[in-house]
Image (spheres, rainbow, N blue to C red):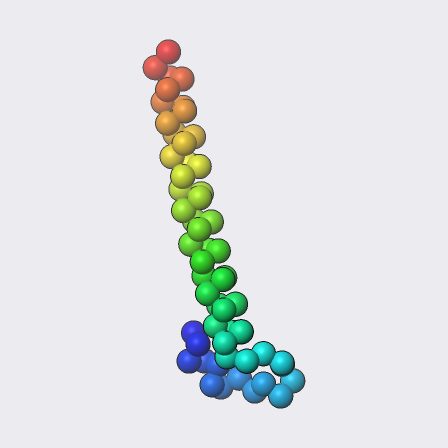
Length: 55
């Protein structure tokens, strides 16, 4: 995605390529971590449900 920064006109937007790359990395890392957290919560719910269905 950083290669797309060459096509952006920075005259109105006061962002440099390094800032754009950091924002892009933060957004992607947030999406990955939230996806992994959702999977962990789902697995926990399934495990608790199976634990109570045994009793």
